[in-house]
Each structure stands twice: as C-alpha cells, then as structure tokens.
Length: 413
Image (cartoon, rainbow, N blue to C red; front, side):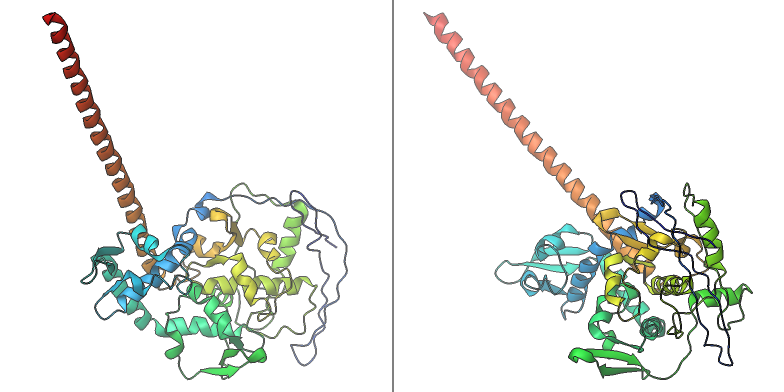
C-alpha cells in the first residue's frame, strides 16, 4: 500500500492519501464499489516558478483586455462609429471598468482616438483604423465559428449533474469561453431556457447527445483507447524544469495514471468521494474545463462558482497543487491563475480557440499604446527641460546685464 499526503512550506496538511480500489462488476458495467483504506505520511511539495507561463500576455493582461473590448464594442455598435464620453462615463460598473472610463480610453491611444465633438466641445472617441480592422476580423470569427462556440457552451452545460446551468453562472465565464455579447439570442434548438431553483433563469441542453472529452479523443487518435467506458487513460504530464517529486509521490502518480478515467460527461454517482478514482474524475473535469477556454487558463477564484454545479468537492482547487505536471499556478499580477500545461506544451493536442489570435492582436495594440504614452511623457519631459533651460539662460543674461550696468555706474565716479 502506498500512502501520500501533501504539505505547504508553513503548514503540513493532510490533503491526499492512497486508496485501494476494488472493482466488482455486475451485468451493468456502471455498477461497482470502491473500498478505501486510509493511512497518511507527510510529504513536502514545493511550488516551482516557471517564467515561460508567467510571461504569456494573453493570460496576465486578460483583466485589462476585457474592459477594453467592452468599450470597443460600445463604440463599434454606435450608428456613427463614435460616441461622446457621456454615453459611457456612468457605465463603468456595467462594463467592468475598474477605473474612470475616460482614463481607460485615453490609456490606449492605439485603440481609441479622441477628438472634439460637434457640440459643447465635449470629448468624443472613435476606433483607430487598426482597431477597426481587428473588430471586423473578430465579428467574422463569431459568424464563421458560431457552431464551435455553441459546442463549447454545450459541453460546459453537459458537465453539470442536471445538464443545466443558471444564466448568471454562464455569464460569469462568458469571457473565458469566448462567447459574444448577444450569444443568448443566437442559440440553436438544442438549447432551452428553463426555470431553476431560487427563481434563477437557466439554460439547459435537450437530447441525449454523447460527448467525448478532449482527453478521450486524443487517446483514441493515439491508439490508447477505443472510446469505451472505464478505460485507464493517463493524463499527459509536462514536468517543469527543476521540479522533482518525492519518491512516494512519484510512485503514487504512476498508480494514479493507471486508474480508470471517468469522463466529465459520464455519471459519477457510484464513486466514493474519498477515493483516488474520484480524484481522477475531478482532475478530468478541470482538464476539460480549461481546454474549453480561450487562453486555456482562468483565475482560480473564477472557477469556484462552478463547484456546486459540476459537483466538485469543497477544496477541489487543491487539485491544481497536487498535480503540478498538468497544471501551473501563476501568481502574476496578484492573481492566482490556473493554466493547463498541455495547451502550451503540445499544440496538436488542444486546438487553439478561434478568438485566441484576435486577442493577441488587441494586446499588441495595448503594447503600442504603452510605447506611445511613454514617448509622450518623454517628449513632455524634454519640452519642460528646454523651457527651463531657456528661462535660466534668459535669467542669467539679465543678471549679467545688470552687473555691467553697475560697473559702468561705478566707473563714472
């Protein structure tokens, strides 16, 4: 029997242990029982910083990009293609703008162009030509990949126990799924609006469509699976450089990889919640969830709202820490962001989201704006310096002239 527990640098917490799982199959392949024996050994697990993941701009600049695109949409949807600042100055909370709207618009001159309006000399804003080009490309992607985006939404809903989710939960992850603002108006007939508990309005998926996770699809393509149920599909592992697991943890991980894989779209009510196979189901849900997102990453706190609906355990976020070969936790920008390693280490395994390249182009404009503002500050500094030098030179000339006058007056005596 193998016994494992994990601990942080300051405290030692018993988070995980080995489970002896015995399967008893009947005529129904879904019915089996799990018998679990517990014992604990404290093992130290160190978090390893990885600069390559911390430097992915589409991830750590995503909080800045989200309000920028919201304001861009407001301007692009205007009939004249431009708006006065008064149209959005009071909508900062709705548009998720963390600062004054005017300040944010002026922070990105490569995206927003400011000019004096036709009345009362109010500031107006319009998109720059480059921003307009990217906006057209973005709208074309929403149209061309409409079915792909709806499939991602459908998979998220089907991962829930009741195959339905409240609209507020879907809207909470709308940015990460890459859904357009009007996605609720363009859904196909497989989606249905329903009333949920507490009076919430929800979205459900009708029919009994069977889904395969991205892990199952890749396993079938590699010949590791035939697409059947309860197969021991291993997770792709990508160890970080310099990160070494303890011998007991490594041995447990080898056994963990051999356990049956439970798809996020399959019934899991027969699993013992404290078993290692239940742990593998949790990891599979997180793997599939992040594979649906644009950047294949999300702030860890944003995933907490899905805990109840995806039937995840109370401390499911600890799975990110227990499996550092699959997930990386970035602490950049004072935010704990969970990143799926496979999406960046094996590009053929997970197809890039259609919007990924578009958001990269917006971030390039944001970087251009940073350079423009830096140049403006530099020019302003030099301008002030030239004025100061000219003033000091004129003062010095005036003092010299006064001294000459004094000398002349003294010589006359």
